[in-house]
Length: 465
Image 1 (spheres, one colour):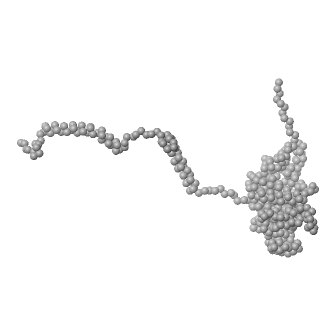
Image 2: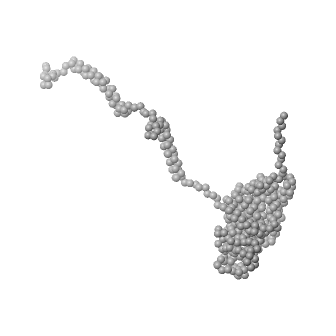
Image 3: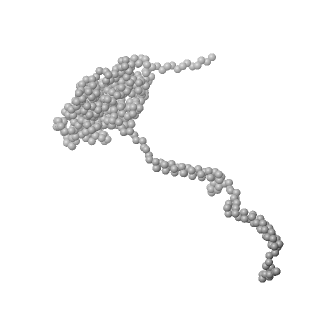
């Protein structure tokens, strides 16, 4: 039975036709799928992978120059890496705490050296420089060298140094003092420079030598025998002049060795106080000026031996190292700086306990714009009050043979300073100051001395047949 479709087609289903139509439909679908697969694949690839990669250019145009793309990338990467590294280093430097190396504080010998040199500023006579740095000192001795009525100058003798606590100039002690200072500068100029005192000590020396040139005559005294012996020992140690000078120099060298042996405690050449101060003047007053000069010579001779790679010297059959001499020098200077039974520093201004009644006219008379005659100053000399002016760096005469000391202005055997004493003190202090590794330069003295033996003749010319 057939029903009529209102749309013009049959409503019944024919099995055979249905199967045929299904196959046809599947075939059409396969054809459509095959036809659509290629554009679909291209579309999906465009979605997932983007458009097809185009051939890249090999060069980059920078406007002013054309470079290879590879070089451009390498250069850009290097710049970026360098900038990153620089920033990282700057960050580390700014954030990490800095540990700055601190220089060790100066030792006591260097501190005392600064003060001991100031004593010479206070002892200057004549027209003082503006940078003299002693407020209570003024021009003095401006008429020195003129006749008694001050009408004419016999010779210009303005300048120089006052010898001690009185306003008197003595050439022999002053010449010894300037010699010791000059010697110490030649041997230890590096230490003076390290302490910032090289120009100062040179100025001190020049102030003295300028005055000597005014008063010089050919009969002036020479340096002491002991200092000359030590200096000649240096000549033998470093230059080895040979015959015929060797025999003479060996004699002086042996005498120096004997003197150095006498400084050692194991020998009885000199007594010592219970506090350890050597009695070079055999218990007489004012011992320190002898002690400091001996300490300088001992330290210097020790440095001579070290510079010559000589570990020590013989005292008879016994051998002593150079450290023994240096220990002697230190023990004596330490005593003067306060390591003594009274715990007193004998250098004014060094430490907390030092003499306050120094036998010194300039330091004991106040600077109050009043002129005092010589007798008018006696009231200041005899008072029990401390000096109104502190004479910084002055080494007083020192204790007695029992380590006793009386801080009394009227007793110059205890409280008077001298040029010769302070010169030896300065020399000993600079020799002991600083690092022991900074020692003498063996080429400073005698570097201009010509050879003391004949120059050997040149070798003969080579023989030719």
